[in-house]
Length: 189
Image (cartoon, rainbow, N blue to C red; front, side):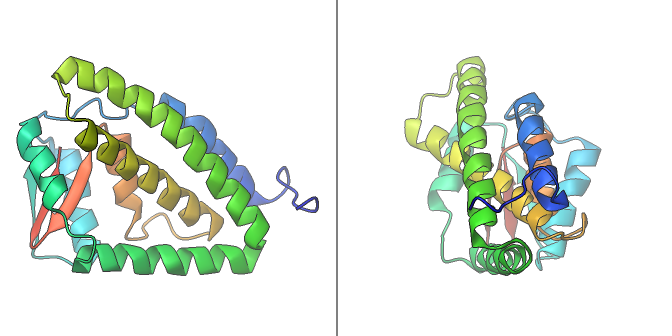
């Protein structure tokens, strides 16, 4: 691991910039608000590029409904399988280009930063919205960490900005909480 040059490898430098960006994002700040056009277009792009062009987007404004949607999400669903296939392919590409040690260190760091920042941001949002369901809050933080992880993988693998998983992070960046694609419905809080 001593031979990893974090200061001169473009992919690792890009992940460093992402790590510094994460604390400045508006994590969870727009949960429960009605959809706006740019975020709606981003959500539709996600489901369409993800291989579910007939899916529709359901914007949750009620936290109980959002929690229920996340609770019934199936980790063996077709959408979950697609996400795992992308994650695996991006990981393979990143490791092939940078080596396993560099990828592991970068992803461990991004997860640690995202975990702390998102936990704090969600605590603030939960207080504002009166959210008290700890399982729901932990699941939301997990989703945000996964989005940060996937965004870092996109950078490490030098994937195009229009990669199908890119909007997942951008929805969080817009203050939303993408919950799950259940059947033909993409749930967002």
